[in-house]
Image (tube, rainbow, N blue to C red; front, side, top):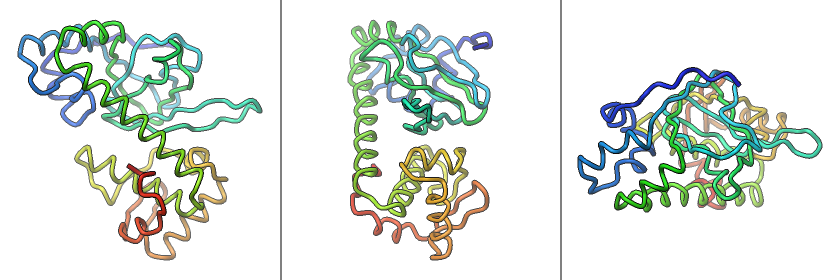
Length: 248
Protein backbone atom coordinates (compact mmCIF):
# COMPACT_ATOMS: atom_id res chain seq x y z
CA UNK A 1 0.00 0.00 0.00
CA UNK A 2 1.46 3.37 -1.01
CA UNK A 3 1.36 5.89 1.85
CA UNK A 4 1.99 9.59 1.42
CA UNK A 5 4.63 11.27 3.51
CA UNK A 6 3.64 11.93 7.10
CA UNK A 7 2.85 15.51 8.12
CA UNK A 8 3.92 16.62 11.62
CA UNK A 9 1.08 17.79 13.88
CA UNK A 10 1.57 20.70 16.26
CA UNK A 11 -0.24 21.27 19.55
CA UNK A 12 -2.15 24.11 17.90
CA UNK A 13 -3.33 21.67 15.22
CA UNK A 14 -4.54 19.25 17.87
CA UNK A 15 -6.47 21.92 19.74
CA UNK A 16 -8.22 23.21 16.63
CA UNK A 17 -8.70 20.06 14.56
CA UNK A 18 -9.95 17.78 17.32
CA UNK A 19 -12.57 20.01 18.94
CA UNK A 20 -15.35 17.70 17.67
CA UNK A 21 -13.32 14.51 17.91
CA UNK A 22 -12.97 11.63 20.33
CA UNK A 23 -9.29 12.54 20.22
CA UNK A 24 -10.19 15.49 22.45
CA UNK A 25 -11.28 13.10 25.17
CA UNK A 26 -8.23 10.90 24.64
CA UNK A 27 -5.55 13.58 24.47
CA UNK A 28 -7.00 16.48 26.43
CA UNK A 29 -8.58 15.07 29.60
CA UNK A 30 -9.77 17.57 32.17
CA UNK A 31 -7.02 18.85 34.43
CA UNK A 32 -4.10 18.45 32.03
CA UNK A 33 -1.43 21.12 32.43
CA UNK A 34 0.08 23.10 29.58
CA UNK A 35 3.30 21.11 30.01
CA UNK A 36 1.39 17.84 29.61
CA UNK A 37 -0.42 19.21 26.54
CA UNK A 38 2.93 20.11 25.00
CA UNK A 39 3.95 16.44 25.30
CA UNK A 40 1.14 15.42 22.98
CA UNK A 41 3.44 15.88 20.01
CA UNK A 42 5.04 12.66 21.25
CA UNK A 43 1.69 10.91 21.04
CA UNK A 44 0.07 12.23 17.87
CA UNK A 45 2.96 12.64 15.51
CA UNK A 46 1.61 12.09 12.01
CA UNK A 47 -1.42 12.31 9.80
CA UNK A 48 -2.12 9.82 7.08
CA UNK A 49 -4.25 10.46 4.01
CA UNK A 50 -6.21 7.52 2.63
CA UNK A 51 -7.90 7.65 -0.78
CA UNK A 52 -11.41 6.32 -1.33
CA UNK A 53 -11.49 2.49 -1.40
CA UNK A 54 -7.93 2.23 -0.07
CA UNK A 55 -7.11 0.23 3.06
CA UNK A 56 -5.90 1.91 6.23
CA UNK A 57 -4.97 -1.57 7.44
CA UNK A 58 -5.85 -5.18 6.60
CA UNK A 59 -6.80 -8.17 8.71
CA UNK A 60 -3.61 -9.81 9.94
CA UNK A 61 -1.49 -6.66 9.78
CA UNK A 62 0.63 -6.08 12.90
CA UNK A 63 -1.02 -3.79 15.43
CA UNK A 64 1.09 -0.70 15.98
CA UNK A 65 -1.27 2.25 16.32
CA UNK A 66 -4.81 3.42 16.76
CA UNK A 67 -6.29 6.06 14.50
CA UNK A 68 -8.54 9.06 15.08
CA UNK A 69 -10.52 9.97 11.97
CA UNK A 70 -9.86 13.65 11.34
CA UNK A 71 -11.69 13.84 8.01
CA UNK A 72 -13.84 11.28 6.21
CA UNK A 73 -15.53 7.92 6.65
CA UNK A 74 -14.40 4.30 6.89
CA UNK A 75 -15.95 0.87 7.01
CA UNK A 76 -14.54 -2.19 8.73
CA UNK A 77 -15.18 -5.66 7.37
CA UNK A 78 -14.05 -9.27 7.57
CA UNK A 79 -13.86 -11.88 4.82
CA UNK A 80 -15.93 -14.97 5.62
CA UNK A 81 -14.89 -18.54 4.79
CA UNK A 82 -17.00 -18.53 1.64
CA UNK A 83 -15.27 -15.37 0.41
CA UNK A 84 -18.09 -12.95 1.19
CA UNK A 85 -17.32 -9.67 2.91
CA UNK A 86 -19.18 -8.95 6.16
CA UNK A 87 -19.30 -5.29 7.16
CA UNK A 88 -18.69 -4.95 10.90
CA UNK A 89 -18.95 -1.18 11.32
CA UNK A 90 -18.94 2.33 9.91
CA UNK A 91 -16.71 5.01 11.43
CA UNK A 92 -17.06 8.74 10.88
CA UNK A 93 -15.07 11.90 11.54
CA UNK A 94 -14.16 12.10 15.23
CA UNK A 95 -14.25 8.36 15.88
CA UNK A 96 -11.50 5.80 16.46
CA UNK A 97 -10.16 2.90 14.41
CA UNK A 98 -7.71 0.12 15.22
CA UNK A 99 -8.87 -0.96 18.66
CA UNK A 100 -9.50 -4.46 17.26
CA UNK A 101 -5.76 -5.17 17.30
CA UNK A 102 -5.01 -4.53 20.96
CA UNK A 103 -5.67 -8.01 22.37
CA UNK A 104 -3.86 -10.12 19.75
CA UNK A 105 -1.35 -7.52 18.49
CA UNK A 106 -2.74 -8.04 14.98
CA UNK A 107 -5.74 -6.47 13.30
CA UNK A 108 -8.77 -8.74 13.05
CA UNK A 109 -10.56 -6.81 10.30
CA UNK A 110 -9.98 -4.56 7.31
CA UNK A 111 -10.43 -0.78 7.50
CA UNK A 112 -11.33 0.79 4.16
CA UNK A 113 -11.98 4.47 3.35
CA UNK A 114 -15.47 5.20 2.01
CA UNK A 115 -14.23 8.58 0.76
CA UNK A 116 -10.95 10.47 0.68
CA UNK A 117 -10.05 10.62 4.36
CA UNK A 118 -7.38 11.64 6.83
CA UNK A 119 -6.47 10.07 10.17
CA UNK A 120 -4.27 11.04 13.10
CA UNK A 121 -1.88 8.19 13.91
CA UNK A 122 -1.45 7.41 17.62
CA UNK A 123 1.46 5.04 18.25
CA UNK A 124 0.17 2.55 20.82
CA UNK A 125 3.47 2.03 22.61
CA UNK A 126 3.76 5.78 23.13
CA UNK A 127 0.13 5.93 24.28
CA UNK A 128 0.83 3.29 26.92
CA UNK A 129 3.98 5.05 28.05
CA UNK A 130 2.37 8.47 28.24
CA UNK A 131 -0.75 7.16 29.97
CA UNK A 132 1.46 5.99 32.85
CA UNK A 133 2.83 9.50 33.23
CA UNK A 134 -0.17 11.75 32.52
CA UNK A 135 -2.92 11.52 35.08
CA UNK A 136 -6.33 10.82 33.56
CA UNK A 137 -5.14 9.82 30.09
CA UNK A 138 -5.51 6.09 30.68
CA UNK A 139 -8.98 6.60 32.14
CA UNK A 140 -10.05 8.56 29.06
CA UNK A 141 -8.71 5.84 26.78
CA UNK A 142 -10.68 3.21 28.69
CA UNK A 143 -13.81 5.33 28.21
CA UNK A 144 -13.24 5.30 24.45
CA UNK A 145 -12.81 1.51 24.49
CA UNK A 146 -15.91 1.08 26.65
CA UNK A 147 -18.04 2.97 24.15
CA UNK A 148 -16.86 0.65 21.39
CA UNK A 149 -17.83 -2.38 23.47
CA UNK A 150 -21.28 -0.91 24.17
CA UNK A 151 -21.76 -0.18 20.48
CA UNK A 152 -20.79 -3.73 19.52
CA UNK A 153 -23.25 -5.06 22.11
CA UNK A 154 -25.95 -2.87 20.63
CA UNK A 155 -25.33 -4.29 17.16
CA UNK A 156 -25.62 -7.84 18.52
CA UNK A 157 -28.98 -6.94 20.08
CA UNK A 158 -30.06 -5.33 16.83
CA UNK A 159 -29.20 -8.32 14.66
CA UNK A 160 -30.58 -10.88 17.07
CA UNK A 161 -34.00 -9.52 17.87
CA UNK A 162 -35.22 -6.98 15.32
CA UNK A 163 -37.20 -7.20 12.12
CA UNK A 164 -35.81 -5.66 8.93
CA UNK A 165 -37.64 -2.33 9.31
CA UNK A 166 -36.58 -2.05 12.95
CA UNK A 167 -32.94 -2.71 12.03
CA UNK A 168 -32.97 0.06 9.44
CA UNK A 169 -34.72 2.45 11.83
CA UNK A 170 -32.12 1.72 14.51
CA UNK A 171 -29.32 2.26 12.00
CA UNK A 172 -30.68 5.64 10.85
CA UNK A 173 -31.27 6.79 14.42
CA UNK A 174 -27.74 5.75 15.32
CA UNK A 175 -26.40 7.83 12.42
CA UNK A 176 -28.55 10.74 13.60
CA UNK A 177 -27.14 10.57 17.11
CA UNK A 178 -23.55 10.33 15.92
CA UNK A 179 -23.93 13.33 13.61
CA UNK A 180 -25.58 15.35 16.38
CA UNK A 181 -22.79 14.48 18.83
CA UNK A 182 -20.32 16.14 16.46
CA UNK A 183 -22.34 19.30 15.94
CA UNK A 184 -23.97 18.37 12.65
CA UNK A 185 -27.66 18.24 11.77
CA UNK A 186 -29.35 15.26 13.36
CA UNK A 187 -32.29 14.96 10.97
CA UNK A 188 -30.58 15.45 7.61
CA UNK A 189 -27.34 13.83 6.47
CA UNK A 190 -25.51 12.13 3.63
CA UNK A 191 -24.79 8.41 3.90
CA UNK A 192 -21.35 7.54 2.56
CA UNK A 193 -22.01 3.81 2.45
CA UNK A 194 -24.01 1.93 -0.21
CA UNK A 195 -27.26 0.13 0.51
CA UNK A 196 -25.46 -3.13 -0.12
CA UNK A 197 -22.96 -2.22 2.62
CA UNK A 198 -25.80 -1.23 4.95
CA UNK A 199 -27.41 -4.61 4.28
CA UNK A 200 -24.18 -6.44 5.04
CA UNK A 201 -23.87 -4.57 8.33
CA UNK A 202 -27.50 -5.17 9.32
CA UNK A 203 -27.60 -8.80 8.18
CA UNK A 204 -30.12 -8.03 5.42
CA UNK A 205 -30.21 -8.60 1.67
CA UNK A 206 -29.90 -5.59 -0.63
CA UNK A 207 -33.50 -6.03 -1.80
CA UNK A 208 -34.75 -6.01 1.79
CA UNK A 209 -32.89 -2.80 2.59
CA UNK A 210 -34.28 -1.13 -0.55
CA UNK A 211 -37.83 -2.20 0.33
CA UNK A 212 -37.44 -0.87 3.87
CA UNK A 213 -36.22 2.49 2.58
CA UNK A 214 -39.18 2.64 0.17
CA UNK A 215 -41.63 1.73 2.92
CA UNK A 216 -40.27 4.43 5.21
CA UNK A 217 -40.69 6.97 2.41
CA UNK A 218 -44.26 5.87 1.68
CA UNK A 219 -45.15 6.17 5.37
CA UNK A 220 -43.64 9.66 5.61
CA UNK A 221 -40.89 8.68 8.02
CA UNK A 222 -37.99 9.73 5.80
CA UNK A 223 -37.24 11.46 2.51
CA UNK A 224 -34.41 10.00 0.40
CA UNK A 225 -32.63 11.38 -2.63
CA UNK A 226 -29.88 8.95 -3.59
CA UNK A 227 -27.67 8.90 -0.46
CA UNK A 228 -29.11 12.05 1.09
CA UNK A 229 -31.55 11.24 3.90
CA UNK A 230 -33.96 13.43 5.88
CA UNK A 231 -35.63 12.00 8.97
CA UNK A 232 -39.18 13.36 8.98
CA UNK A 233 -40.63 11.55 12.00
CA UNK A 234 -37.92 10.57 14.44
CA UNK A 235 -40.40 9.83 17.23
CA UNK A 236 -42.28 7.30 15.11
CA UNK A 237 -39.01 5.61 14.19
CA UNK A 238 -38.07 5.36 17.85
CA UNK A 239 -41.38 3.75 18.64
CA UNK A 240 -40.66 1.04 16.07
CA UNK A 241 -37.66 -0.18 18.00
CA UNK A 242 -38.23 -2.81 20.66
CA UNK A 243 -34.74 -2.47 22.19
CA UNK A 244 -33.64 1.20 22.49
CA UNK A 245 -30.26 0.07 23.92
CA UNK A 246 -29.35 -1.17 20.46
CA UNK A 247 -28.83 2.35 19.13
CA UNK A 248 -26.90 4.00 21.96
